[in-house]
Length: 112
Image (cartoon, rainbow, N blue to C red; front, side, top):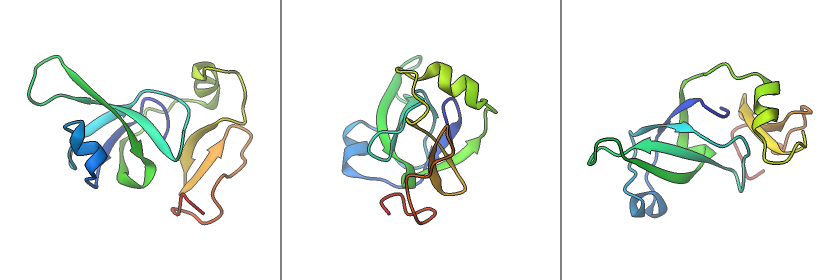
């Protein structure tokens, strides 16, 4: 998972429900960095046409729906600060920066 990928929310939590976001909704990752094991995701608001809902979503609560095929260079260009150590994508269960360094030790356990 990385910027501009389509993702589906697979778990509910109180922080999502406060923002009117429920499991099953599909959104787009709109920021390249990963902060506190979350992506910032934009969802279409099903109640209001042409309105959007935004929320930080934990990686473990997302499922990839559609890969946008963004290259590492594209991700790097979108970073707010040009530093390849920023966490930018999730591959094979690992949070990885653009240098290939893994943040978590155990795949799919994003807090390890």
